[in-house]
Image (cartoon, rainbow, N blue to C red):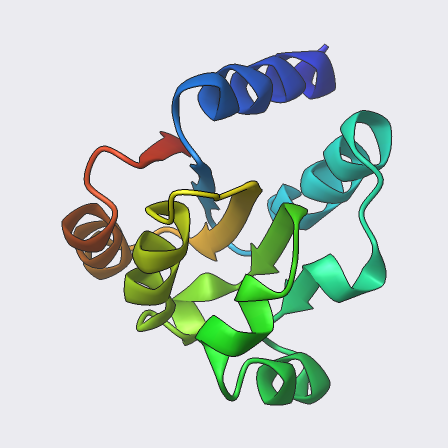
Length: 129
């Protein structure tokens, strides 16, 4: 039941916003739910998934605008609180005229994270807590 409710929240969030954020404490199942959503609703190629606790994924985002602008469809960024400067890049990408990307961002709950994202992504993000 929880999984279906979560999928509906994410799907509904994407109907009105190009970015959906799942915020919650560590080890609360955010990553597992996001991966299930991606598998069931949209095939997620490996290159569209970034775990910012993985050094290889951090290196792939050394030049974030270049790396992310080459991708299409659903893009998942896990542990986004490790790179809060990405919020500005996401705003630029989702505001492009030919944007065909949706970002599912996952992060640990913190007032600082919410404040940074709400300033950069005002009107562009839907949060699930």
